[in-house]
Image (cartoon, rainbow, N blue to C red; front, side, top):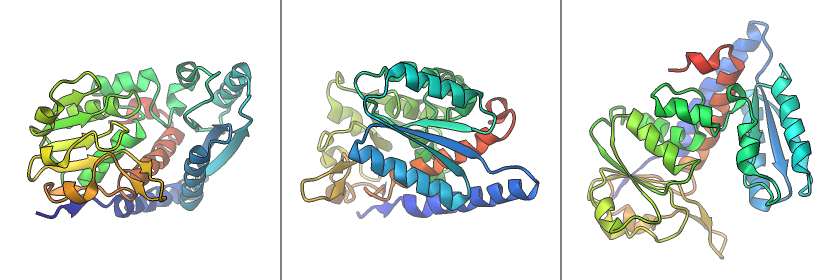
Length: 289
C-alpha cells in the first residue's frame, strides 16, 4: 500500500482564493480590509520565519498586517499595555502573539488578555470553551486546519471513526480532540503518561501525531488503511524538515497521509487568515456555527 497525499498546499491555496475574493468583496462594499496585528517578541529564528510567512500570506489575500517587532527584554507590563491598546482599537480585527514568548513573560496571562473576538489563534479559554460546548467561535488554527484538509480530500463524514491524538498540548492536542468530538469521532488522547501507546495507535482509524518528538510512534503500529496526519515539524542537522513520524514507512501502511512540509503548516496559516476575516465581521463570536 502506498498512501494518498493529503495536500495542504493545494487545500490552503483554494481557501486563500476564497478569502481573497471575500476581502475584495468587502472593499467593493466600501468596507476596509481586515487588519491583523502580529506581535513578535525577541529574535528567535524559527519565530521570525513563521511570522514572515504569516505576514506574506496576509498580503497575498489583501489582509492588512500590522507588525509589532519588540525587543526580547520587553517588560511584560508594556506588552500587556500594547495588547490592551490593540484590543480597544476598532481598526484592529485580530491580535496574534507569536509563541514561544521569552521566559520572563507569562504566556497564559498574555493570551488571556487578548479580547475573545480578536483571538485569531483561538487560544483564549473562552473560545476553547465554546468549542468544548459544540458552539465554536474562533477556532485554534492547526486543529481546525486538520479538519478542513480532511474535508478538502473528501472526508466530510468522520462520524464513528476512532481517532487517536498523540499529544495533549493546550494549543494542538487538546483542541484537536475537541474538533474530532465535534466531528462525531470516538476520541482517544494519548500523552506522556499513557501506557501501552502502541495498542492505542493500532486501533486508530484516524491517527493525529502531535507530540513534537521524532520517532515516538513506530510506523508498524499504524493500522493498515488508516488516515494519518502528522502535525510535528523538526529540522534535521542536514536542514531537512521532517514530522513526528517516519513518512516513508508510515506511507506504506496508511491510506492517506500528510507530508512534512506541505501538509498541516499551510493549513494553519490559511485558518489564521480565515479567522481574521471572520473577526472583521460584526457579531463573529455569536454567528459562527
